[in-house]
Length: 492
Image (cartoon, rainbow, N blue to C red; front, side, top):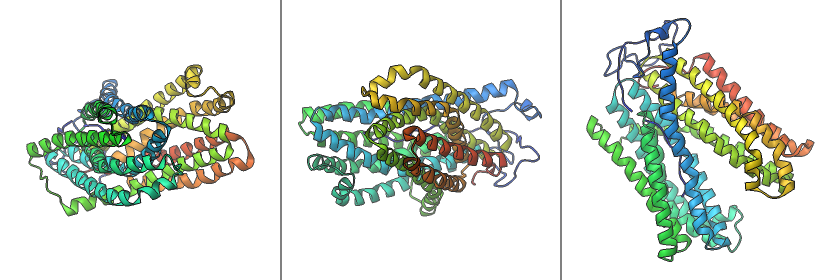
């Protein structure tokens, strides 16, 4: 089952404004439920306003909230790859051609869904701002616009995928024996894409509402249902790979339904309309365009890296795939902190509290650095344990090790990048993120493409990846330091 990124969520309060005199005053200066000086529900101490920064108690308060959002988000993110692992394990017993077909179809589906991840990111920032302003009705209404956009995009993807499935599978170089299975799985699974996109948008709603536990519960339920349905339909009903695809679609529809029940209940409780609003849907789409550019640029980086590794030789590309798998796994821990950042920063800015946003940004950067150091140390210490799990080929191991050490050393940079990326997403600073990622791609592409020319092998390629992360860190740090992202108010 192809799963999607999860997200955070919990309710608003208001109080006195703690904006510093030199903070930006752009955006709306009113909060519907909190008077003209609406404030974030974090409840910052007055000691936070000292020149020495937040008090120790306030820092602990930030830490508790970050953990309360990040830990369930991490659990849901870790559950994500388990969906595909279950499908692979079940289909793998049908035969090698079926498993190869699943791999190709799953790669296409994952790419299609990841392109629309902006449905979660843009919705998070918009909803969190409304929550910070104390207007839950508008927050949920904003979330519904994102959900309606998800349904429209899902319908469009189905209309494209069904007739073009054979062509798409052929582009991925499927063999004659694997292609029929890939086409079957892709066509059936495409009916679950609208549900997957609804899950993305709905997790954005819950993230903005500061709720990461509901996505975790839904992810666990979806994982269990997917496993049971796959076994029942593949073996019990004898449907083969088609049964795996239908099991996935049913599980995805169940997850989307669970999210919609939660959102609809909230809408009714707060009097928010459930009807599609064309202006709101257009606004959601416009907010998502810059994040789409960012996502496509990032995926281009990963595709270029894989293409370069393939040109280096079989051992290099095999080692690269192992490192990339570990890199993605480590990113879940860092992304969980970024998810917390999206939710908390948006809420602070919606509550007209830029100082609070800056304080929690600094705190999350520390969390990112500490997490990155911890992950780097873990890679070094655990390498004798996990490397044999991936390969027994000594040539691949020898190629893997030095590049893996580069990844370990640069994890603190990754920690900063993930956190600041989440902070700016929470601030709704999508246009800058898009430009910064395009610049990063422009720097990385020539550096990576020159690796086969000048030699250095896989280690040199991962130094180029480190350059990419360093450029991202620099562009994100310059933006956060400038303070231009601190635009307050219920809408950006």
